[in-house]
Structure formats: C-alpha cells, structure tokens
Length: 144
Image (spheres, rainbow, N blue to C red):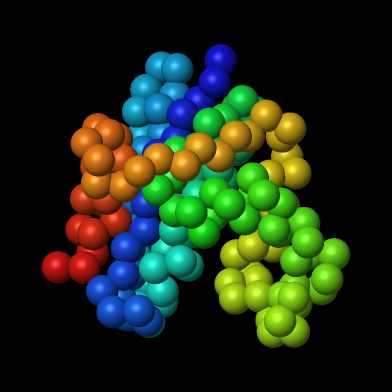
C-alpha cells in the first residue's frame, strides 16, 4: 500500500527563523511532524520537511511513497535529475558555484536510494488542497 506525505517549509526572513511541517498518511493512521531552525532559509525548510518525513516512513518499513510538495526547488531537483547532475559534478553548478544546501541534498539522496518507488509530486501552494494547507500551518506554527 502506498503512503502519502504532504510537506512544506517556511521562513520568517530569508535567512531567518524557519519551520517545516509534514503530514504522513499511513494506511492505518495519520502522523504530523514539524520542526524549527534558527537562521535558516525557506529552501532548507522545504528540504528538511521532505527528509524528516521520509526518514519516518522508511523507518516504519514503507517503500511505496508519494510526496506532495509545493516546492518547485525540491520537486524539480529530483524529477528533472538536477541532484544527479550535481552529484556527478561534485556539487558544483554549471556556473561554477557550490550547490546550496549540499548537506541536505546528500541526506535526501541517501533516503531516495532506499526505495525505487518514491514519487515527488508538485502541488500548487495556497490553492485549497486540504493537507497542503495543513502542512503550511504546521511549518508556520514556529514563526509566531
């Protein structure tokens, strides 16, 4: 059975205080995960939400996973294989600069390698998608 995960990250200032949230829809239950960091960026929080939710689901033994995110940064990096290119080039961009958030990309790569059935799906943010709206609130709950 497939597990569905909804993720979001948020930041007050960029950099600034950040928060991330995830809703994990398991066959028998629903879990909410969230966390915060000081002096971070929105992109780091988007990545952190995906990573922490994947860690939880993979630890529980699930391998068929759909991840819904409104972050083009995260979804495109995986689906368009940017992370494979970065890895091949030693995490140096075509412009010759170091890829930002390398530590988190390496962690995500390690997690994605644990299953061939992890699918990232881009959703439109703030468009009324129930679980996406809920993870947005989880991510922003630390910013008050």
